[in-house]
Image (cartoon, rainbow, N blue to C red):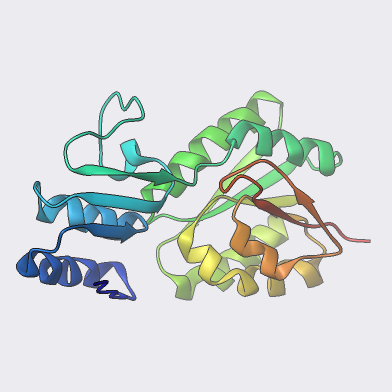
Length: 212
């Protein structure tokens, strides 16, 4: 028997997980960071499998994370090869001098990706600017600001942006700003071309819009 519950927003994850623990289910499948965190806080006994989790150490605040959570938690990761993706920005948009990093600050995994990618690009002499927002209602304004100030925009694996990729596309395409992201969901908004890279899901699509 499978009991599938959609929380809709992070604040409801705890309510859903508490329902599962009250039922004493045999297994909890936690999709995305908020669900995993709620499940981890709710039970030490029921096995938990995480999915759509970028970095378990960050999601669960684990120090010296070595790739194994232990206890009752396991799962899969969608962490992309971040430095490889950062290099692709340099290769595909060689004229870019400033890169905007667009992500949701409510997602700790996105902040982790920002730190890795920005450090790599800065090491290559690029200027990197952080554009973070806390709610999806802020996405259009922050994307508009980034498009007006940067030569290219990078979007990490970010659940909030993946659910609202059309907003980013609708702002950046008319502005002629290249947008690159490691999330396969963004492939729904392809520009003139898309490059297939090894990534989060084996053959994750890297969405690329480059002005003609």
